[in-house]
Length: 420
Image (cartoon, rainbow, N blue to C red; front, side):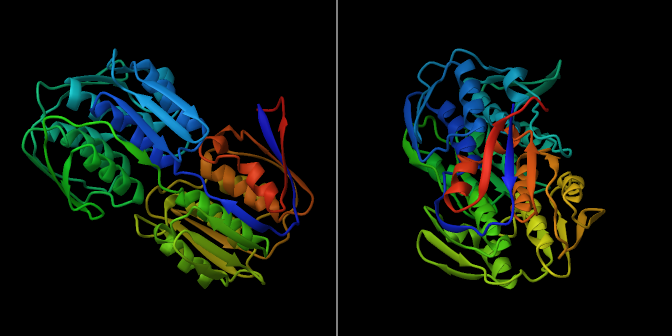
């Protein structure tokens, strides 16, 4: 098992090319189940989660080969309709295969998902949406079993704007008979990218990019080539890292439009930011201002950024509050930040941060992907040496994380450890 060893106190300066979006790739890959044939998904990040999804698709008979950042998928011969627990337990996005399998093959047996250790993230909206399209669902020994001779278009309202459920039901609806209307659908860029890929495959979808999606079912789809969008969460993480250390950074291969709310907050915190078509330049010459943040649905601040923002506010002179309206208990990074000397208190679904205290290096442990990133960022401004354990969580969602940080001046090394 690996850990990161971080020596704090260095400003970050330089240029980073942002990788393809983890969450984008995890939506595009299962879409290959909707139409047999070969797909080329370019700008695919080389990540633990991408490999997990590849192995899951392999178990269904789909061939996946990642060559650099080019993913080649061949779904010509699907030989199984069961997504086993051994794969699904590692990543919640594995549940994405349910909709495509039942839509195209009329059957699916998918384990209830696992993934990060924090918070209840139920799949009830996935199931209710598929039931609305006519799927017969049952729960057998921890598996969702879905059957349908032919899905039928219908109206479905998401009680909560859910990215995963929107993607799953959207994919299923493309092959349903008749028209489907999805309201309060997620509008995150990863869903928009999925919808655009489905249209290239031959799907008929109106309202892309809005919370109301109208789908006219078609008899069949065709394989396509698709480029994965840039990872907005990775981009936000590196922008925050530079801001925390009083540095200067240029991000390339990024879509600033996907980060409008994050950029606005960083400017409010005192960062000087310049953007153009596919670049973001940030410079921070002083301590950040203490700025409150509320994580919410897109186009608001992503919940996947709130942990990193909490670390940023540790560098601010004053008190700030970070609230998560998506997941009310996503604060397992806070006890570990306290080990570094942070003054943070969790009250309900908010973290109250009293910034300005000098952090000191310590051994801390990642509990999930974004919590792990937040601990690395805090270690960058801590005095002395920190060790971040269980970095396999970080490897799930950041490509070459330590290499990119090292390239802009951070002192961070990956080291083998016997500690868990």
